[in-house]
Image 1 (cartoon, helix red, strand yellow):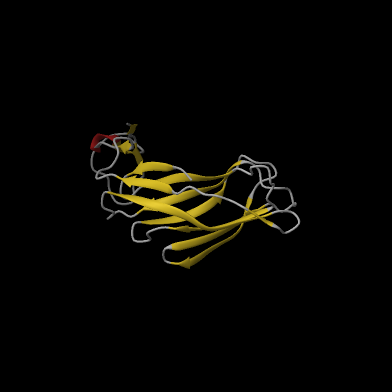
Image 2 (spheres, helix red, strand yellow; image 1 turned 45 degrees about the vertical axis):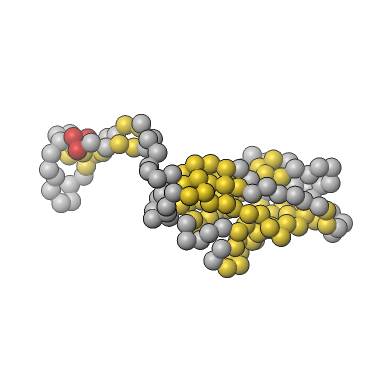
Length: 167
C-alpha cells in the first residue's frame, strides 16, 4: 500500500499491489484496519488486468476493520501489480494528523488450496490543515443565464451556465 497527503473533506485513491515472489496465488484475503472517525473507504478493482481481478467479497468487520477477498473468476493466478484501488474519503472535520492503514490477517491461497506467505507494508495518509491549492475556482461573474449568457441574478427555474478555472 502507498502513502499520500490529503485535506479534510477530500478523496484519495491508494492502490493495493501484489508481488507473488515465485508462488502464484489464486485468491488473496486481507483486512484493513483504519480509523473510521477520520476516513471511510471503498475498494474497486484495478482495471489494468485482462481478464480482470474481482473483489469477491468486501465486508465491514467492525467500524475500524474491512475485509477484502480478491481473485479471478476463471481460475487464473493473481497478476503482479495493482489489484485494487482504495477510494478513501477523508472526513470534513478531520484534524491534521498522520493516519495509518494496516493490512492484517493476510492469506494467499495457491491453486491446490495451500497457503503461502505474504508480507505487507502499511499505508499512511497525512491529513493537512487546509485544502490543497488545486481544484475548481468559480467566480460570481462566471454564473450566467444560459439563454442570454449575461451575468447577474437569475430567477428560480432558469437554466444557468457555470464556468471555472482549474487551478
